[in-house]
Length: 223
Image (cartoon, rainbow, N blue to C red; front, side, top):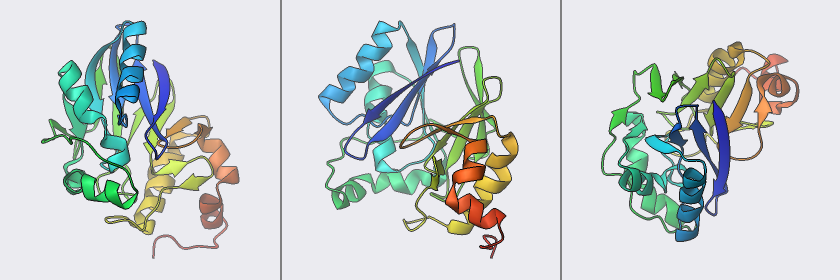
């Protein structure tokens, strides 16, 4: 599996394009929000001879969804998201206004509900869908075990974690997601977050202060 990252919109969100030798591709967290950004995504897809077949999202915050409707209508692909994050799509324009960001058309429906689904596919690639709530109620991460890569959205960043003070956020749940569902995947797994640079689970176990304080019994995240 090959991976490309394009950083879009004023929130500097990472949009990922994934593809394999079939040249079918999935767009993860399409955050493109202008004609220039739409062209950048289209040009990348065209230059690599890719065929988009899926727009999949880790969660429903506006900065991760602003380009989804463009991808859906341009390429005629389904939109995959947990229905637990539907309320975030419905309130995306209001949320964008709070950050001074104009939000365009949002998807009117979720074509593929990730709630309760354990995998999604494109080409010859299967991505495991791992529920990782805490940043949002319906947040998921996508894991490709052969390549040992994990797309963590806004659950886990390099040396940080996602915010839990937004509607639907919960600190206990995000730490459960990280420590009970992400960390067991193994130190060598490379993480691709929704913002900022790549990392590995091993690096986060050593240098992520939110994880370290729990491992050192300084914080009880379960209560």
